[in-house]
Image (cartoon, rainbow, N blue to C red; front, side, top):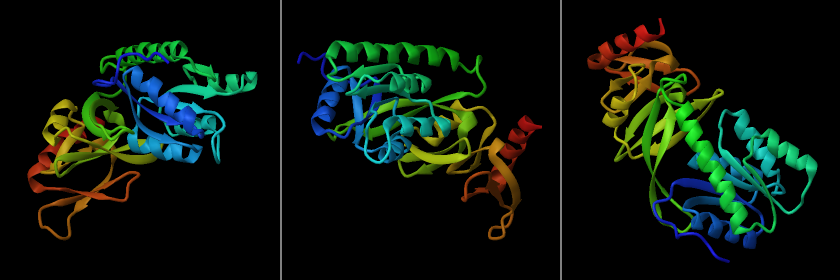
Length: 269
């Protein structure tokens, strides 16, 4: 099989959901040949959902007939939770009904096995075109919510460390915490929360965001739109405790940062 250029500085990341090892390896080769970093492979719909929430890749390449639940059911659940990955469906059967269900999920391609390099590359080209359109339409001037570009360090299935940029709408960011040399970003989609890690510093993220995301203390930023209540800190005199919607954790609002909270609060009035 003739492949495209080898994997260097991948533009996109992907998860492959396939329950046959030979097919999985073939799809990895095709993806890497197109410059895509495969960050995980799974064999069931349940694991596809778990893996997506962990890595938040750009693309899901999925078979329909997976273990436990179908790839389409897993993608439908992710869509229900508010995520919008690019989906490429790979299947061994040309079924009109399945093709219709795939189309309803806004999948970019419905590839019947055996998958050729030419058809796979055309599918990736659709992803590139759709990504370009999404980025244009996601401009802060055209859509609700500022986009924050974060740097993320991950490993692909070969164990290679790669760095990629991910784009997060600050409307979904609940709070950000400095965590050693990394930061953890807690997000909320349709009342379902998850956390991702980024290598961008707290200072960089603070500079990229609007004033609705403010510095609450030396190691945390908070989105004022997710604040449920602010009350006095019973441990440290002069500090406050921020209670947030949708998460169990609370955030300390230091006395030195209270002015940032006041400024951010004027945004939602």
